[in-house]
Structures are given as C-alpha cells and as structure tokens.
Image (cartoon, rainbow, N blue to C red; front, side, top):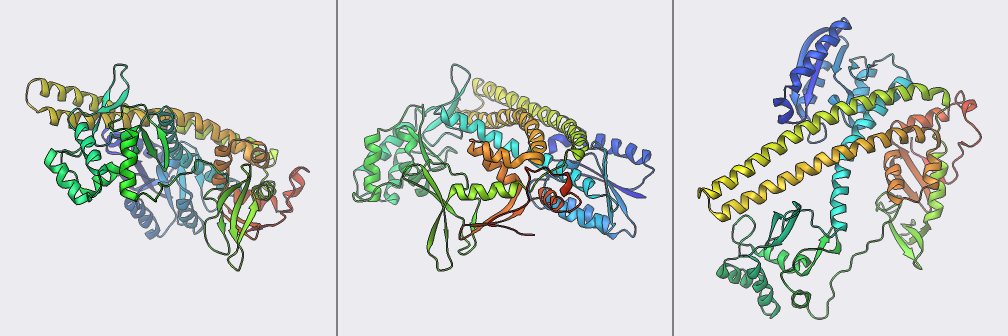
Length: 504
C-alpha cells in the first residue's frame, strides 16, 4: 500500500525545535516496519484548533486524487485532528476506501474493515485530544477567576494605571504618577455637567492625557474611562461588578455623579445577576427558536422559560428537565465485557498526552526565558540613557503582559494534566453510569460540562425534551438499542425514554 506522511507542529517555536524532522523520521521508520511505500511527506506548521487549516485540506485533496487506497500516517491522533468535525470528513474517506488512518503512538489503524469498536476507540482518542486543548483554555480561565476572587485584575492596566512587580514579586497595578491626576481631572470636569465627549476630548488633549500606547485619547476611550468602575475601586468582569485591591483614582461619589450626568438623574445603572443556572445557554425552544432562559422564583425554585405555539411563555420546572436528562443518560451503557480494551486504549492516550504536554511546556519555558532576557536588556538600555522613561515603561509593560500570558499557559498545562486524568476516569464512568453522576452531583459546573460533552443539541417543546448526542455517545445509544446488546445490560439501565425525542 502507498502511504502519505503528515508531520505537524502548531507553532514556529516547535518548528525551530526540529520537532517536524523528528516526527518525519519516526514515521518513515513506521512505514518501513509496515511495508508501506511513502509517496509524499507533508511537513506543516499549522494550528488544528484555529482557522480553516488550508494545508491540512491540501493533504486530504492529494489523497483523494490517488487511484488506490492511501495510508495516511501521523505521529498521533492530535497531529491530524482535534475535533469531531474532522472525524466526519476522515470517516467518509475511510468508508469510501480512499484512505486508511495510521496513528503511530496510539498503535491504531482505522480502515474500511474496522469494526464499530475500532471506530469508537478512534472517537475516544479524538475526544481526549480535543478535551486537552479545551482544558488548557478552561484552566487559564480558572487561574484568572482565582485572581478575580482575590480582587486582582487579570488584564492589562486601564488607562491611568500601570502594571508592575510589587515587593513580593507579584504582578500588580498602581496609579500612573503622571496620568492618574489627569484621569481624575477628566472625571471632575465631566461631573459638572454640560460637557460633551467632544468637549471632554479637547480638555484631555489640553492637559496631555494619553492612552497606554502613548497616543492622544479618543472619544470612545473617554467614554470607557467615564463608565469604568475600576477608577473608584471595583472592576467589571463579564458584566459582574467586583471589588479590586488597587488604589482608586477617584471617589465613589465622584464616579456616581458622572453616571448621573451621563444617564440623567431619573435613570439607574443596569444591575447584573450573578446566579448560575444549570441549563443556561444549553436548551433551545422548539417553537420560538430562542435559547431558553432560566428564572428563579421565590428565591429557591428554578424554571426554564420556553414558549408554546402561540408565543405564550411557559415555565418548566428544572426538576422535570433533570428527570428527562436522567432518562436519556440511562440509555448510554457499556457492558463490562468491552471495558478492558478501552482501558488499554485510554492508557495509551495518557502516554501520548504526557509527551505532548512536556513538549509544549518546554517550548513555553524557552519563550519565557527569551522574554525575561529582553526585559533585562531593556533595563540596561534605560540605565545607559539609550531610551527615554516613557519608552522604557511602555515596553516593560508589554514584556510583563507577555510573561504573565506565558506563565499562565505553563500553569494551565500542568493543571490540564490533572483534568486529562479526570477525563479518562469520567469516560469510563460515563460508559457505565453517567446518569448516576448527573443525578447525584451537586456541582453545577461539573453537570454543565457533562451535558456539553454528551449532547450536540437540546431542544424543548412544551416541556418535552428533544436531543442529539455527540459522537461517540450516539454510537453507545445505538448499540444499547440493538437486540444483541440488550442481554448484556443490567436492570438499572432501561432504554425507555418518557417525554424525550431522540434526533437520529
């Protein structure tokens, strides 16, 4: 069989580390062991999670043009794909016998003759790779949320403040000695009333107020400054107002007076809700097409809001929807006879994850070292008088933000390792009793993550739930409905769904 080799890294830093050539060498050795004739090798630098992946599509088109089946060889599943969207494309080519997928690290071959169990192994591998990438993002968010809970601001300093390292070596914010008094003057001017944003800009220009980039402020930036609660001691994080720990530039009374001027004395600022709902953003109304909202009644009873055929609002108790979800989840069951093979596969996935994690952390640490060295050189330039203080401050803040970003990503990789371990445990648990996990858990975030992992769509029609499962869980349900599968299921896993419609 003829073969095509795909070596991929997701960044220029990895390419410079010779990761491509190392992959290509391993895959040539693999082809030799398998008696495969390599007709072309592709070495690409391309993220599998962003953009249209043009080079990946070129490889697919090349394989499709060949007159015989092509073995597409990659180092691991995550070198080819990180989503089920690509699984659909590749699965179609496998079924048409245009390609045969070879994954070196997982020791897995997916071809036209592969059975349902092999395909599900592949799907689980894709899920693991996709989950790792998503967990990186989630863990960066969690590190940010931890800072927010402690009153720390996670981003670049607002105009009038600067980022710096405090005496404890911690990233911190403080008022800019030059710009902070000018910010206060802007608030004082605006609070007097009868001053438009255009007039306020003239005032800002006259006193030399500049943005973080050193340019004159615009009217849109002035509006953000006037409406930003950060200046009196609170920060707006995704619509939630939280106190911060930094020195305020203006008083709360002065800021409030500016809002009265901006809104008019009879208007009140919008108040945000901090209540977290289980089904927020997850269920769509079948009649209106809208995403269903959730409401709390009498301070303790949660309802999901949908609409009937006449457009009238209907309030469905959350407990009723929970019962339907449990009924669906009880149809997902994996007999013990098949679990051993999956345990072996998940162990292989873990080994691939370790290799990927160590490589990524190594690249990030190298980048962090470069940024630190550049920051040290910057200080030398300032001490020698080669650059002015404002240039030094601007570049120092830029380097500090990059260092913070890299440090957060390194932490995220370390935390993602723990989450990947949890995912492996959860995949095994889901295959046996996911309904029990959902039913007994009191952790809203965990239940939401489980729903996102399992369901492609959720739709409600007058209180009755319709749904479509993601791969490979849809396959589990298909198998559980197979007469040959049913004798293997115990009495705790019935397949009767009341008030539930499955979209096939």
